[in-house]
Length: 358
Image (cartoon, rainbow, N blue to C red; front, side, top):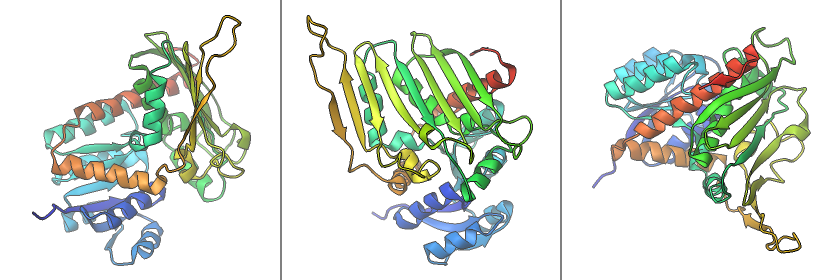
């Protein structure tokens, strides 16, 4: 029996768009029918892939001419809603980079359109496909309740990445754009609803809109007493030392991601280093009668973990499976809306100085 091949149109050829295009190029179940971008990125990507793909400036023209089975949307978030709905209307499934949209109403409209046109919608929560992060979440659930979850991803961005970040900050703050990943992780760890959020932020540059800020920290307060914070800062002024914390502890102990190489000098704005884990350190709180630890810390070696490109390949294999096997994606679509809703509430908390009830 011949495997179904999905004709896919790639829209946006920057960091993530290029990684997804490489996945489609290499995987048997996909055939790229076009690359869409406004600038030179599509030509550079086409050259890297062998130079045989059709290039388009206009998304609408590409959609009409190529008639794809699926569309990969890896553009800036302010285009997500319109592009996704046009794809569904054209009869295509959609893989879309996070965040799903700029606001909750738009995100819900995208999900509603997927349901209305009976098409698959997969949102790019790359950490869900990372075996080390799956293990991190699994171990965190053994540490009792309440949990304390501490995470950050600060990036000392410069050169090309500072341009990318400034473009992103024309519509979203760092704690919304990146925070949706880690909010999603925390919700999985706790398995309970956040009741309210608080947040702080600071604007450290005049190169972004007056209403936005390039450093933020959010705090989540869950109904079971668990708490979590996530911190994100972008820009050439960010401290390299602030880069990497991924840490969870509860009454029974702690589990931490220890990524020595990913934390090396100059790696903080490298997309590849953002998913590296390398090892997990598991600590147990058990004490003897003299209040000394009864167990030594365990190290879970993750040296054979997938790299960033392999994670993108796994995401796209899941997208392929969702289409071919007609998977029910209701829960994952709802999770994408929920994490965005929480992230935007945190953004509101920064701007109002108020704690926001969910």
